[in-house]
Length: 260
Image (tube, rainbow, N blue to C red; front, side):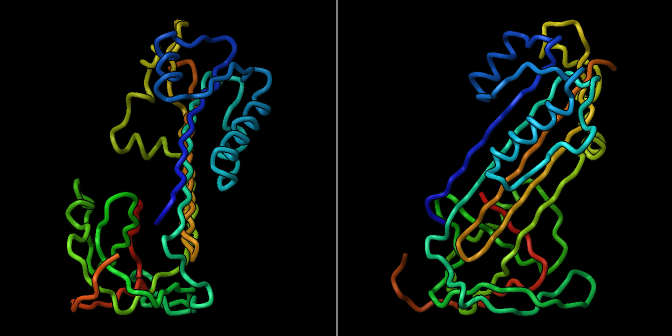
């Protein structure tokens, strides 16, 4: 993929009754480049939520709307922290949309197949890890547990010419309130008293909710993706033509994909 655009944005909205600790504010300004705002959660919670949702939509180029659901913030909210990520990259050689045809895609553990639009290319394709931005698609033949270093262990190191190349177009969006999941994974500190270093006021800040949404679309043009996480807090508790091995690359069953 060539000429990718990648942007990251951070934001913080603190209730007007509180003040950021100068050292924390310095980190926000100089390290995270976060835009900070003093707001009135106690009397204008709905307006602040709308402001945060607008920020999220702008920073994700319109891909993610309304990261905060109704009543996500109220008069008890003291601080909201947000992180947004946006990516767009075009294939070095764009795929021809007229070559996209429906093929069977086999669903996981059901024995059922559905018709899905598959992209292809008549140009030579190679399976290889290159320097720079990469897209990986893993075709899983058996159950693989996630382990540290999975990508480095499974990224192809040798070049193999692909004879038949088919990958489906797809668009995926996902949203979750992740506090329960994070606690289940052992991340408990943000949810208990002890985050007072963020503010000068003597209040025990705790994370109450963590909202996350993500979006990715892969088509003939390339890839566009976005992700955003918002935490609410309360006070309180090219190569020479040589003879090579050829393989088929047909992603017609569940697969793992990532961008690196």
